Image 1 (tube, rainbow, N blue to C red):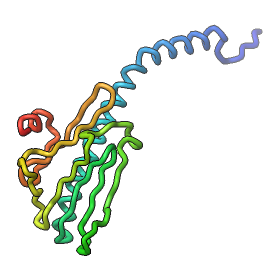
Image 2 (cartoon, rainbow, N blue to C red; image 1 turned 135 degrees about the horizontal axis):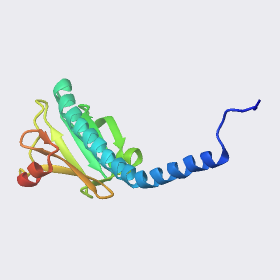
Image 3 (cartoon, rainbow, N blue to C red; image 1 turned 180 degrees about the vertical axis):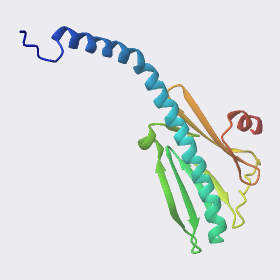
Image 4 (cartoon, one colour; image 1 turned 45 degrees about the vertical axis):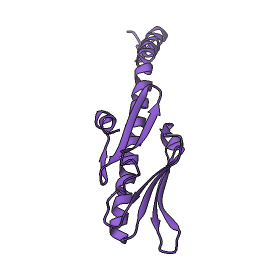
Length: 158
């Protein structure tokens, strides 16, 4: 009578590890690209939400509010009635998603108490670009506060 113990041999275990290594080495570049694409998409959604928050807070408080993009940080400020502003929300997208934001100069989009974006002197769309690796996303505010994340629409309105 034979005494058999259940389990795997060393050769079987090595074969499994070799196959797992091959599959992982094939999948890792695609996972890296997907991570970059998701970071840009998530950042684009956060910037859109912050612009919407600026508009909504202007309406809710009956005071001007501002969407401010400075470097890789975006924030929403509301006029407090004493000649200063209070910061409602702030996000550092470089720290959260490892993305870069443009333009390089400070971008301020003011909203009046009715929620309309106050046009700049040239009445052009204000655009925030989001970049990571080979991926780019845009959020633009044009007209009286309409938000678009469609790159073709934003380019046509510039």
